[in-house]
Every structure is written in C-alpha cells, then in structure tokens.
Length: 69
Image (cartoon, rainbow, N blue to C red):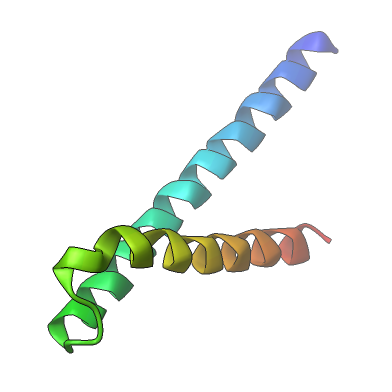
C-alpha cells in the first residue's frame, strides 16, 4: 500500500513538473512574440516574463483540475 502511495505521489510530482515545464515553454514563446512585435523590450523582460508566466501557469493548473474532475 505504501508503495502505491509513493508511486502516486511520484506521478503527481512528475505531472506538476511536466506542467511547469510546459508553462515555461509557452511563456517563453509568448514573450518572444511580444518582443518580435515590439510590444515588449528585451530590457524589461524581467518584469514581463513573471507576469505572463503567472497567467499561463494558473491557466494550466485550472485545466488540469478540470480534467481530473
């Protein structure tokens, strides 16, 4: 039983790691598009990236909880 719980916890962590990696990748692509279109300057990327990541990450988390239900 403990082994099953450990495996379930490990799988859940893996899913969160995967979701976080996907959120980072999507955020990067969005910010690059913003830079290419002139909406964001490379000099203020430190302000924009965390804000975009927060929105993307919360959206990914919402989608995961909806699919689990």
